[in-house]
Image (cartoon, helix red, strand yellow):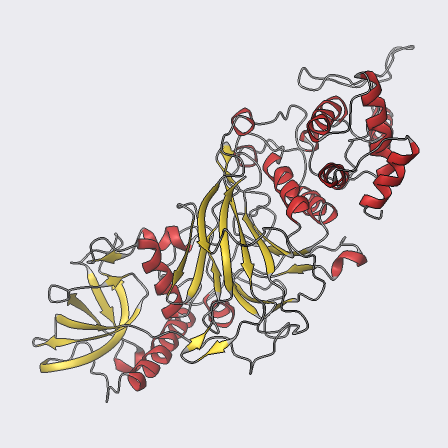
Length: 583
């Protein structure tokens, strides 16, 4: 079914001699067509019927909103004629295996107080592939009252760059390209076997991480050699190792151990931090410490070397299209996409309205789409498989938009593989016309959008590292510290051991979970407070979640300069402006 256009709407309105010169009204009608998957002819006919019953209302934005609310309230909760026919056939089949009913008994559709029978036809009736209907999940699904009564809709809660000048609307550019930086062959593109890794394989991965970062640091800081951490020494020495805790509890200043690599003996030694003025440490961090270990049983650290940043994207790497230098608008959103007390997906419907209004060039949508932590899913109160729910949800997004889409999975997606790194979604029913504009990526991944590098992970590393990190600096920004650790450790999940809710496969993580370079933009959605800020030259964004419990959350939008220039001293930041907005 081809998407309607404003020209078609004008022709249909002219048929009924309805004048409409306001582009905003036409855009609103087009938005309603896309959201409810109907044609221009259908919506105009329905408007004429509605307007006539109300005394020939004028075609305005306010009247259109009233029209959508009343018509969808009367008919939006009912299935199509095809669905009803399928249900009747299924009921007939079941009746053939049961005791015959009384002669003359009459079938009637079951109704509930929340779903009274409508006398009107179903212009807004969802198709079998559409998820945006309460009846798609539960017969008694009702909209979330707290979400409906939320305040501050469209309020900008955080900004970055020159937010006053740019116009927040995409250009609909077809020259923008979205692809994985590593290429299809070197990226995680399919599922793999997991849950049988051996401890020695994990040890090997961690050792290689320590040695590779250590060798680069040794060369950068002109360190002759590293001393074994447990070797007694009366002079100041430099040691290399990984930070760990002396127990299963939370790391603190008195429980820090430094564990050496296999090459240095793989021993652990307690670390005294009393002589360090500023430090920020977390379990799994690879560090170089300078100090003394007179007895061999305790290392007194006096200096801490920080890992330097990896190289940035350069023109020597394959660039995306150079044909256009127009700014690119990117929309960012992270699930859950429905309130915790219902499965009506109202926030997702509102987000689709924003997308059809602003027309971003690229939309990055991160899971969970079918949240395993949702109350009704945890209590097994859904009537469909998780795969069916996901297919309807994504199908509605694809059919309701026209720009480029990027889907990132989450370990909270109930239907998907529970492992990190996580393979991309599969959409076998995706239409041929939509294949070119839909990109399915793993978690984590590094993307290239118009010559701008994006680092993406839907796993809540901010929350996990925030619970384990210790620091001595007063007044410093915790979020900036964690982002800096991710960038300097060159890993999308540098914490070891990982949080209990993260099912880590370290062999695949070594291959697919590292940052091949320092990205221009790093997207890290979290349960913690949203933010957008520059951290050592990288624009780090926590767009928040689209839904926070029973109320609305936030989404983000960025304006980027394609193929940013290089100047002496580094690469110009491609992020012209950014905003975080309440849904």
